[in-house]
View 1 (cartoon, rainbow, N blue to C red):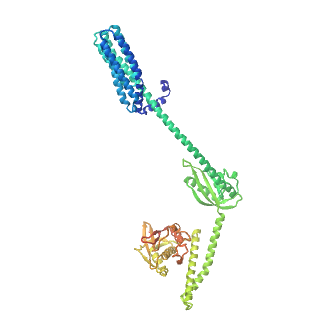
View 2 (cartoon, rainbow, N blue to C red):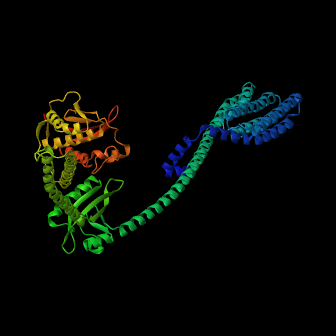
View 3 (cartoon, helix red, strand yellow):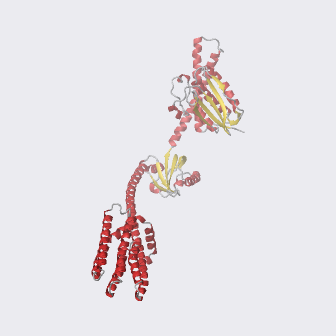
Length: 597
């Protein structure tokens, strides 16, 4: 990066600085040490050549022995530096021990500088003017030449130059020559200037190494990022193929679905329709697309209600199932449809469109109506003669018609009992049909629940004695009022008590309890001593015609509708019903009703 680049693009400069600051200092130091050691052979060669030239020039005179000693010192130092260089190159841990290798090189540089300082101190005062000039020039060149050699680490250069300059400065200052003394004052400034240059170069090199490492790390990060992006692109491509496949499947499903499928936008306009929708309403897709679907398919009196329901659906953004409306066909005829609405919501939680599924239930509703009418009519037609038959049998069995033979009495008793079972079945069927059709009405009143429980136990005691089972209360029945239908509470208790009797062994006891389970809820429990409810039967125990397939209970009868009726009656009175396993064996059926206080 040039200075012009930095001036023109300060963001670029600041990004470079931040990258340099993020580089690992240990790796930067290792690179600097590697670079300075790579220059050692050049420095050794240059220093050796200059030393040979200096020794040749200074060989004359009476200091030949000192020259030989100095030359030997140079050779020894050169050999030591070569050994250091060789050891560094062969080291397997030089990157981890970069600081130590730098310290050893600093010692070598100081020794090298001190050797030249020794030459300045010994040879400068003892030679002629020409040799002194030569030696001064030589020392200045050696000091200056060390800048590019050791500038990568300015402390190393400072040690190297100090070994040369300080002895030479001392010689000049004590030589006795005014000019030399003045020069001695300038040499430290010359030394400081060179050290400052080395320091500045050190910073430049350091920034360069940091940038190189930072950009290298950035390149690695970019490479890893590119690999991740490539992987994500592959995954996105696979996801795109899956979405396309799903889209084709959904389109095929909608096209061939036997039910009407629409797609509406958030405003309720038709976006797309399937062939079943065209057949159902008699309009073509071109006629329906773009039209307000919440309006043209519904009679005028429903249009406002449907529009309001649509707006609530868009606000809530939740699926809606089982909406039943009368719809208009193209020819003006009406049909009954059941609709399911599913919103399609984007990441911003906004409804982008909605899938509307509708099916014609006109024939289904008609079939249900006919079934209810048939069941109701049949039940009434059966109940009238059956009541007469049971009444006649009761007269015969009571002896009003005179004494009858024992065998005949047994037959008429069996006929009366089975007739009563048939009448109970007809009554239960009628109750279920009334509940499901919404025709069953309650007459709630404020009642004392403990009184109703006691009455129910008295009314069903004869049934229990027939199976040799007793009724008993456990704990205290509190005098708490509830708002309920007296007749239906008796019906619930009768069903629960009769079930408990049938499932209890001979000589067993059915216990009845009453307790508060919350501030405004009262729970009544009926506890039998039977064998419990099979696991596979528990999920459907409150369903219609549900009976556990147990051989020892079949002879005791039952329509399989009692618990289903109890559940619906309790829920209509604002309560709930359930069952629990009883400690020690048996089952507890319970129902809860809200108190009236």
